[in-house]
Length: 271
Ligand code: DGL
Image (cartoon, rainbow, N blue to C red; front, side, top):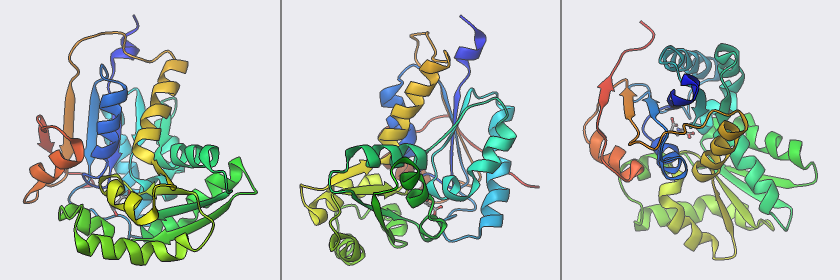
């Protein structure tokens, strides 16, 4: 067995939302070590400029590469939307996967009507990254995007099945639902937590693409193709780095992750 296989997978996000991707990775690849980085001191990224997001993203990718990760997973849709090239540049030979590529592929595969809705942060929607990725796969598909800036704070508040969240979802989704959309991409780390509510608002017929699950699937495939899967069958090691540990961090993080967070360490970037 090469020692390369036993290196951890590096996953990063603007905050704790990327733990939805970690959770899906833990389910799909239960023997892989994971190093997570959440920039909790500087979240949210979804309303910041491209130059700032590129700068922050480079710092995070370099930090994880120093920890000898065997792959970099961009769990943040906003970073994936505007800074994937920066990550690829610093990653060199290390494979880079991201939530947008995985989500776009899954959506293009499942749509029957040829119309896909994408909900995401304002920066992700403005970047047009999902529409570009989907059109690259199938130029005939129509993509309707809607920015939903209020969802991130509502999810962080824990209002996962709350009348305010439901009303907000109904309002946001109006413009998407009037089109003949049969597939809805959750283009933000936080949205998988309100998937049941969104399914109710959209109706059972709507296929909801959860980019956390599709990213875990894509990661498993890529690591297998590259011969990088860890063949060991031991309890994996999970390490979490964050740039701040705000009030309620642990409880919110554990809700995203679906299990307890141990080995949590605070670090500073960009000094
Ligand atoms: N992680 C971000 C995303 O997936 C949401 C939170 C933020 O705005 O930083 O787009």
